[in-house]
Length: 455
Image 1 (spheres, rainbow, N blue to C red):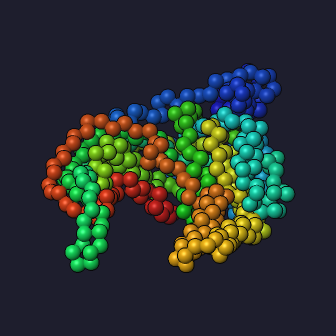
Image 2 (image 1 turned 90 degrees about the vertical axis):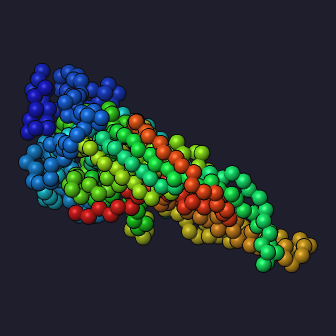
Image 3 (image 1 turned 180 degrees about the vertical axis):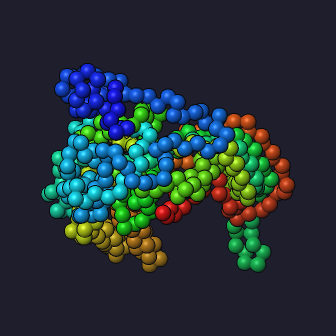
């Protein structure tokens, strides 16, 4: 097929540019003569992670500059989002965040064209069902106005920009670990109090290893990288990962027809620190699977990860997005992975209803403490228990509706291969402790998501 302006495909059979991706057929189809074409592979764009000896960056990861292709970026006057469209297809579009109409009058400097794209495999109707199922489980405590206005007719398919990073690394982790050998009771001589104590064998441990990591996926939109911000609900998009990025194909703007897309607005240099820390998180997680013997924890004192080579590829990944603005002008989203159907969202909550039922739960325990004939001390215990149950109930429902803690567990979900592991374990002493996890375990720490990315 012929390319036009580097990204547009014209049908070689009839010459028209009305060539779009068909989800059911998983092929590009000419909408005029109905000729079908196989998507272009990315063969030659990537090399195996184990063969990386230096940093490689594909053309789509170049620093952002003005783009003269037919894909342009429009700035939304309603919420400030920047949306990428193909100007050959339309002179306007709808913002996928607040659904305002965009026009060419709001054009801004574009980001670089991505290298690869992962086409939608979940169609609109299936995505609507996923969103409806998600919301239906949360309608009881949902805001009344939201329940009345909720409709999936306004969902939008969006391609979000990501960097896919492969790495070839050699690591040396050193620290101490504890193995619980005995638990017993011991009386404190001064107070006469009986306490449970634990005897723990302490080891000095070292793990030297090679690790290859494939397609670590990093958002390359500054707004989505800020997923720890409690005033935003965009963290739900991060949580529907991972994508089956091994199925990515060569980017062509024809895949954008019928969908919105966001531009990349950060360069590789802005992501280097975050990527290196996330690679270390993946390595740490991989090692922890072989440390079950140390049931009192592992505390790594030194973590050296020598990155022999990295490969950066820019990608568009597919998401179905539902948005709703509540009366406080907070935008809530329900996002569906356009490949796997994984769904996560934020639903505006009816605070009055939730608070009322929380108070009623506490009052039930208060009434029980009053009417049941029990000692004063037991009444206090029942009141405390009622308070705790009410707080847990409120917190659980808040979490279920808002999902502030939802995140992509990249440290365990990213593809990796750990090889050539050299183990050195030496017992150095036995110690007495008041806690089973007395070593100060940090073997499951996740540090990469706490790296603040600034342009």
